[in-house]
Amino acid sequence: MKNLLIVSVVILIALGFIVGYVLFFEGSHQSEFKEYILIIEKGDNLYTIAKKLKSNGIIKNEFAFVILGRLWGIDKKLVPTAYKFNNTMSLFKIVDDIANERIYTIRVRIPEGSTMYQVDEIFAEGGFTKRGDILKVVTNRSVIEKYGIRSDRLEGYLFPSTYFVPFYYKDKPEEIVNMLVKTFFKKVNREEYERMARNVGLTFEQAVTLASIIEKEAGKPKEEKYLVSSVFHNRLRKRMQLASCATVIYGLMDKGMWHDNNLKKWHLSYDTPYNTYIHLGLPKSPICNPSLESLKAAVMPANTDYFYFVSKNNGTHVFSRTYKEHLNYVKMYQIDYWKYRK
Image (cartoon, rainbow, N blue to C red; front, side):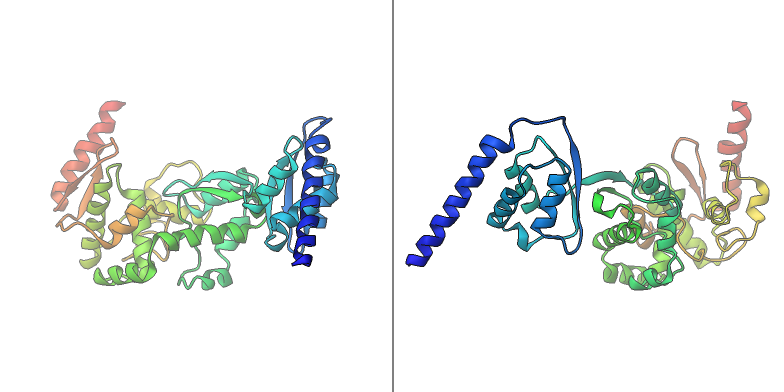
């Protein structure tokens, strides 16, 4: 009992010293405003962190930080990450931010339908990686196998969303890719999705590939995704070419041949593993990273007898059952539309 009392008194004295120091010294006589991103690496402790903060002008007293950090218990849960501090923050605020893991993040948006090439560009432009870093990871066989995906790339599994990416992931492309793929599997229950894919005659990977084509081909109304899905399912059952321009474009992009965003007639006969005008069935892997709605549409197609669709140039499509009917719509919404706009 006596020992417990002594320990309590010592703690109170130490806490009193810290409070007094922070109130009367730490916050006073501030120099020019400074910001500092604290990177906590594996093996760092309160002493190494205190030195970093002191040498970068964020705190004045290392001892006070260490004592307060121990009282807050942050010495027991330090993990590699990053925090953003400035020299106007109190010692209490700095320690509390670490204790409550208010890590420094940067907002990054991956639009629905982005390709892995665009994802690579987004993170490079955001200063997280160098161009090509993400591409090296998503085509690394050992990384792909870690997720049990039967493909030569992780295209299709880099879930499009708005992320608050930990600054600690800077120059760590594998961590970034892991974050995106983990989000995919949080949104998509693999076992359930695999079962639904089997019900419509597809494997798990084929369903994701189909979803990526739907993402690129469908119009603005989400209902259209299910209609577009029905067209592709009907074509697959009849062993007809999918004839998707989006897959042709991806094949050209994959070969570094897509530059001016202008699909030419000869492109449709240029042989790549993604050209669905030439090859029957689905391409060898997804052509973008689809939205959750497209992933659903791939395994829950509408029940139709449509085999064709054509753009109405307003974000929607018109669907048809016969090739003759389709040709009439092509004339109406494509040939005549563009002729009279000239």
